[in-house]
Length: 113
Image 1 (cartoon, helix red, strand yellow):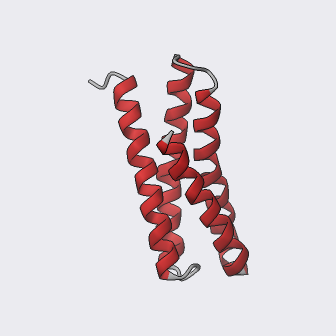
Image 2 (tube, helix red, strand yellow):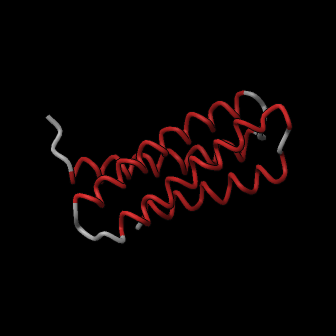
Image 3 (cartoon, one colour):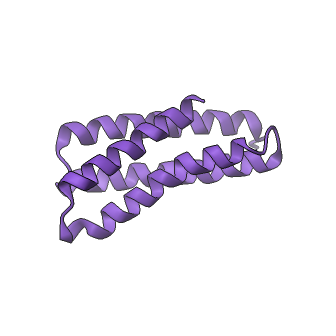
């Protein structure tokens, strides 16, 4: 699943940047970013385990919300100088891709009125 692969790239990148660039004043942002990015990947995986069901769609929705949160936190971390610009831009690209793929999946599975 492509959305899961993009989410996996984000989690790995966040962990790597957190390990190298952690700063005490940004600890809360970095910890929340780790949790949010991991939530995207894990909710996709957990939902997939339920097969083609309403529960799968529910977990995709949770993953989408976490993907939005991840993007906001990446923007915040990059703007605050917690992470270098180039790796941050790469992570933001993967996070956007994951978010967009999840939204497309949700639109196919849900009826929006």
